[in-house]
Image (cartoon, rainbow, N blue to C red):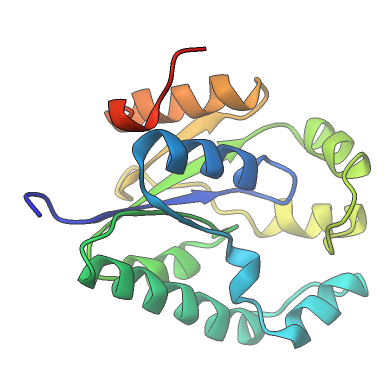
Length: 179
């Protein structure tokens, strides 16, 4: 492989569109995709389903499992797109420990927009009642962190295109088709 594998961590509070946008980015780039929720142990899912916010002690093994997965993908020569709330710099520091270049895409939108989205979402274990704790925990990207902040209020396609442009990445022509 000519270039070092890259990892895009699509981050933000619950309901910001991480999974939808990350899926689009992975498809457009031709990169491997993973959903952060797949890395949560059942105890974390049970807590969130009960409306109990996770503690840092709950999150460390989850973040380390994602970091290790990113490293295994890089060692296999694959670039990835993964979703992860990554609300705190300390959480992002764990993910940055992966082999390869780790870049963050922060999907940002006002609390009212996010709350409305969460209120209309089904089949997910994150209740609207935990949204305020997510915004309280959120530490926006610093200028020293490798990443971009993208307005997440638009359609998923618009948000994905804005993210690619902000990152200076182009879609892989072999993975796209004409509309």
